[in-house]
Length: 267
Image (cartoon, rainbow, N blue to C red):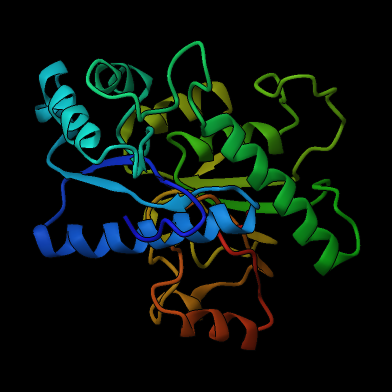
């Protein structure tokens, strides 16, 4: 729980195979702070918080596992509300709801947030395009998407003109000129190749140096750092990943390079 000045802390539950507890603690502190910023920027009466769980998702997930987390969340008496995040889903939140009232993102209610998160990023990217190029259209623009599991997957669909996951939106005819993507999960790579063969896969280390208009980080944080900034050729950095700047000074470094950065907690 980072801050409850404006209201109870809200933030998802992330399950990741961290190298050690120190890495997990650093991540959860950064994520909780980002949620505080996000709620405040959106004018919500909520604070920021986050849960990280340490383990291999393929090995540890079970009803009992998430019900135990639910009991812990309930013990906080409403100071913290959780939801799904990396490697957790609506089914997992149903198990939490068996033990706590303080969980959102349930099926039949707010559900999976990924399509909506990606929609926010899509609209934010259009704003960034207008700032840099004078037009918000994605037509003729090129993109490098880092991560295609959840939010990145939906963002790619929107950039291709597929808005079937957005309620009450009448599709326009805008379509990106070229999209590259990278991903470490083989099933997500195969899904993208099957559904959108025109989207080109590149190895994870090559995604930064592509000659594109927009680099969109949609995986994990701290990817904008001393090693990657010199490689970036894009004019815009705008994506869904939390805490993409490893340190605050890296925002200044992007600015010095003439790169527009859309803060993840806003977009």
